[in-house]
Length: 165
Image 1 (tube, rainbow, N blue to C red):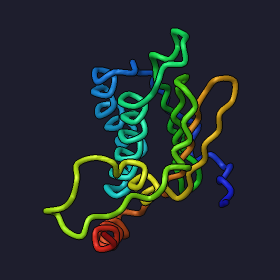
Image 2: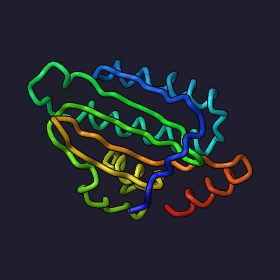
Image 3: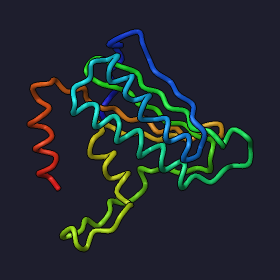
């Protein structure tokens, strides 16, 4: 398991607490826009950050089973810039769920046989450099490391990733 870089890239970290609802999910786009602008992230990093945050939060909203207390109605998101990386943390108080135990999906042979949904965890694994899960004191904590790309590498990386499907 790769170790997380510890040197902060900036003193700034970003946090957002959203309702565990579709209305809460709708607030993510503007929040990610502000992070991308503040950190001057390359388009490839913007895409990976946005996709991973939206998929992780959407999984909690759509599939999380409340554990019985009032705090299960919220998802807490954090983005911390590190040297060359972004550490993304998603926390909820729903029932225990380790997304890393989810098996890789059967990829469709073509678009005609493709089903909608079921690819979120697979996509997070693809775009994050590292994923870790822990359950402590009733909290599910998913931590992802996303590499910050240079503008020069973005187009090549996007072509490579699209070609790997």
